[in-house]
Image (cartoon, rainbow, N blue to C red; front, top):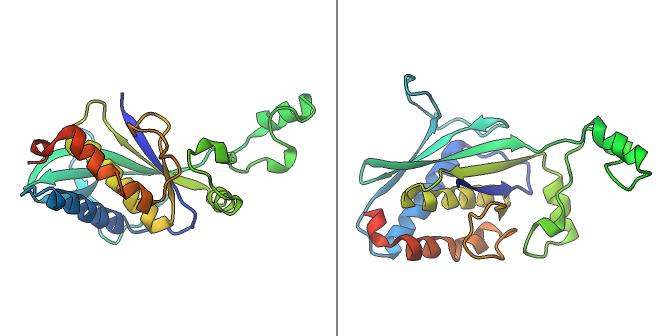
Length: 215
């Protein structure tokens, strides 16, 4: 199945798409260089389109905004090899049925009327790493999060690249990285910072896919 990596920011900074694209490319090239792979990677940000529509690349001055869906293309030595699909989404908000449940259950279910329209709270037990109360306050203060998906049985190039997209976004927003659908082969990584995530992500992908997949 397709897998996703989410990034939950702790700041309200919305970076330029170009910041994310260029940092993703830099992180990817560093991995190839470290393993002695004589390949050049290029990352291009584009707008998804239909088969009969003209492909449009994202202007460098464009900033991320909520409900923006993009494609990140990964080229090896000039050849388009694969893509992943990062998006910026608004977190789901509490609506009236949840308030009704709270009233009917005497507070055992749902949410109190004072929370109507607020985002569903992110809970500390959703992460593997222990996060402080201040960490959780900052995460819950942001009404949006990034979501990057790679296609089912996608090539190694995209399956590695989408992790670098997540790392770049987490760096830019002091965010936390997580996946709820098996993007990480090993457990214990949900809630990592970009710095923590980068200590293992590239090496694990290289160990699984092997160097020839990136040549």
